[in-house]
Image 1 (cartoon, rainbow, N blue to C red):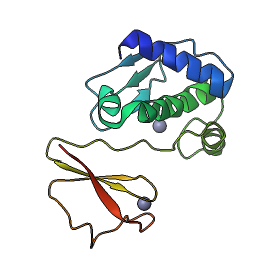
Image 2: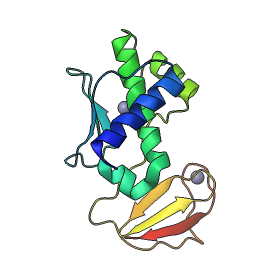
Image 3: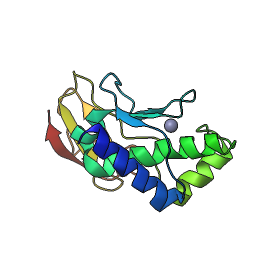
Image 4: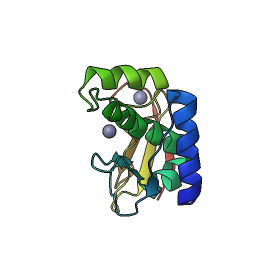
Length: 148
Ligand SMILES: [Zn+2]
Ligand SMILES: [Zn+2]
């Protein structure tokens, strides 16, 4: 996916979920490390970490775009656009945007475990005993989903 396709995707998500146009620019930024994306207050542009797409796929990319668009539309409307703001919570729920995005592995992480209940991902340097360890959020079993 290139920047042009990303722009189109973002514009259509904006119209479909927020019923408002996205009139600024969205680009992939390879220099982002662990964050999935960011909204730039000064320019109203959005930057997306390409690793989110490579690593977690299109669904995760759409989630991040939605999340950044929540910042974007609230900021432009002069409402509370920060994670802790009530407006942010309400709009996130309305459009189905996650409050936080999936973490990305750093270069030491070799194993990815995914919760079978809530799909939270855990990155580890070593293999863990999945018979012993459970998801810390919902206590469901974990599954080894990827060896990096
Ligand atoms: Zn955010
Ligand atoms: Zn879980």
